Length: 555
Ligand SMILES: [Zn+2]
Image (cartoon, rainbow, N blue to C red):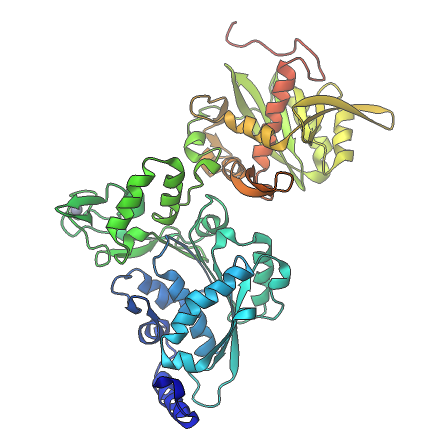
């Protein structure tokens, strides 16, 4: 019956609808009103009844310039983001981009997420045209009663730069942040630089601790949903951090309960958002499944039971249910392992004996270590600007009695060679080549230099093996530069740098896990070079030859 509405009938429908929508006041509540009135999901009209914590986010969204929402899967945020895109275009007349990992992904998303919402309300159906081929929605102004200009909402696939469009945008919404091409993401950022509204909304499950989505959230105000138990008064309960102590079986059902008195909790009614870093400019929310009653506990607990038996499933559970990013077995050095290798000692100004390693870039990261028992104990961790690297590294090598120093041959080969000429019995130039650990030499303009090369993966794996709980082959100082080691760059580089990602191996023609390349991993690389220096030295293969390894512990 609806299919053949005559033209005049159609515009009548439209004018009635436009009158209706013009009653939407452009106040800060408008998105919530828009959601409640015009957005339907497969469960019916969008409602905050069982998505309570999302209400504050929807209310504040219009006023936020940048927000990172670290979320669990299926908590209702994608729907809100879709609505936000339609609202920006239709009500505000602003151009927005909705970024997804690939073009194919973007088209599928347009079909499966945008189109059902558009089809779900006659006004949206009337005002929004979609062009699936190019991932485009043309939205006629919903709020403007006069002849409406068309505004575009772009569904972007960010797999290559040609997809990151060149027209200016007022808002960018980033979905699936951890899978998006990070370089293109930064490039797309520039699209909103010129807009007075310029808004960036990131929302995604986080899979990689310290990277992507997690890094963005960590740098934000870090809002968490705090629950206060009305029965016993226990406050500040963060369910995802208390899990599984905050869920119990009561009779036939699983219930969210107070971690103190174990009575059932109404998490919506007794919770509130609190920022852990209220002074930070960028806003961040963490939305685990546990605080959204719409997500059933039966489902959550079934997944939990399965995950309890397998580490890889546990990582997924923590990332997608608790919104606590976990890389599972892809994380070669974990925070727990790092915390277990800390001891109380002061970094050294001078030493009789050390080995050292440098990661070379615009800033050189340097690590010196001695031996404590049979463990590599890092006694000095330092950065040196590249333009002074030869002088400063030379001074450190001397002050710390360094017997073997492994430094990247690239990208500053001239400087690395200059350093080697100053300390010919100490410095070894490092290359990553596809071969087993091998000491060699190279000659340039009549001077011979010591070199060491190793397969990158094998090399980093060997270093990461030093951190395993049964091995504990390394020691780091508990405090570094006046702060906890775990808050230091050294720790951050080890956590980020020791993650593996599935990477296409062109030779093997399949995906294999590899250590990340473009990531802040400098102290991990420096520490690994120090490890190589120790290997060379202990095997008598260092430039200084045999017999320089001191004997510890009175042996
Ligand atoms: Zn209680």
